[in-house]
Length: 122
Image 1 (cartoon, rainbow, N blue to C red):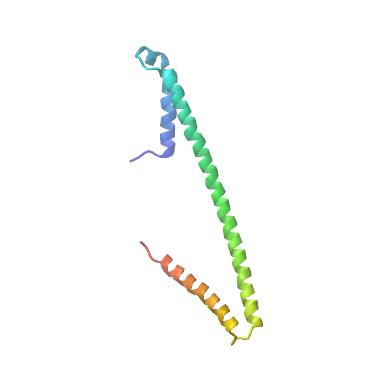
Image 2: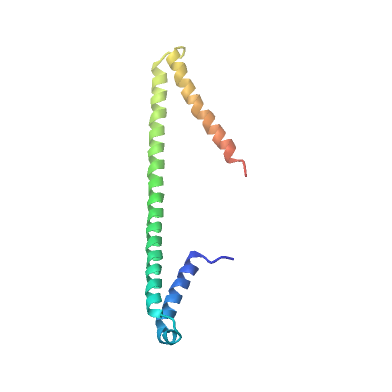
């Protein structure tokens, strides 16, 4: 089983703390804990900063998705109302009216196809 991001980050921090707390003993054993500890802390800070940015971007994406969905809903309702209004002023037998009915039909077919494919499990 692999470690979670949080567990890995904790590991990074614990290693850096261990080097700091035991630097004298490590130095006597030939391990430069000060230099390596600085390097580890820099890398830990890089990970933490990148993670903060990623979380911020996730939140922004979530909010932007709401904005896009609301704008699409508003645009669709307006387009549908305009189509209905145009159909109402045109003769049902006119070529222009037939084009409008085909537009509406395309949307309904696409909606049905999407609904059918949503029910399929892979």
